Length: 406
Image 1 (cartoon, rainbow, N blue to C red):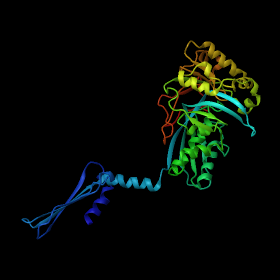
Image 2: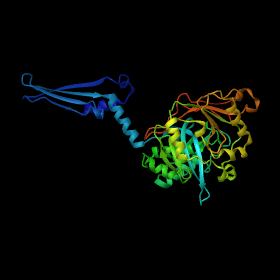
Image 3: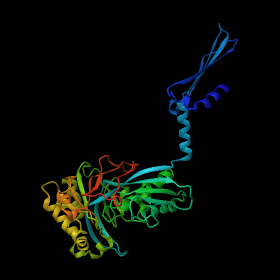
Image 4: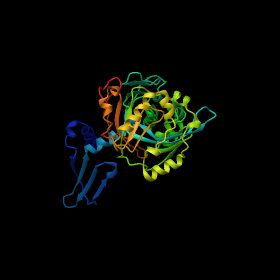
């Protein structure tokens, strides 16, 4: 056993890892007076242990030979796996994508003051990156961001989500978080809701996945109506306040291009709902809209948004922007519509904005991003497509937009 202990200690030094495929072989011999059978012990390859012992005896030679074969790299990997298991993850970088509302019907007002809606939500490829690290503190989280004006205190949905997770599970992990913001705020794209869902997912990973996806989805509705949607597979028919989520698999081709165009001004969701008049909303049946999109794809007639008229009252320049995009459309877009409560206008069918966005000084500060639909696999979070990009039409402003890290 002295030789095996010596080999174990030596295997952890770099000089023994320079050739991972090499195995150490040790032989020693002992006198033996009688013949004995050949015996071989070897551990399972599944456990990545490449150690074997062979004992052979010969009546003619009267001696016994023992061979010990040792795979240093396999043992190193085994020890590293055990350390990872004991310590758990300490850092995690996640993509936090936004969403669009392909259609949005407001069907009534609830006793609690919220409105009932019926909407087709879909995740798209524009998103933020959030970096999580375990904090040595057992008292508070620390949030930083690359965008001025984004709150970093407990009013931020990321911190609210982490507090919610600790409340529900009893875990005591706190985090250092850096938010690389790429989704504009006040855009009707659910960027903050996505950040909260991503934070819940991250906290659960750090805790070994003790909560199910269904748990996370149900809990998230306590801090935001749009957050539960992000625990769908990426496309869902949402009702109630938005927290009742019905997955719609394989609804739209993920390679269908689109362009997102947002003016510098944001739309206040509260102001938009304040101006909403239920007697002036669309009479289109939401399930009929969903069936039409499922059967024939997106068209201008199916992209109904009951929040457009009140949003255009709140921000009159937004109505003008939509009209100009439609007027300049030369068949590039199958539909042009507003997402959520604004102020993003979506053009489906092309990743390119109309030329006036670049040529007209009135639109020099407009945010422009190409995008496509995005989904995720079960038990995995969303992954950023390599080709995703976001720019301002003329002069990029570092205080407003920054590239996604990593």
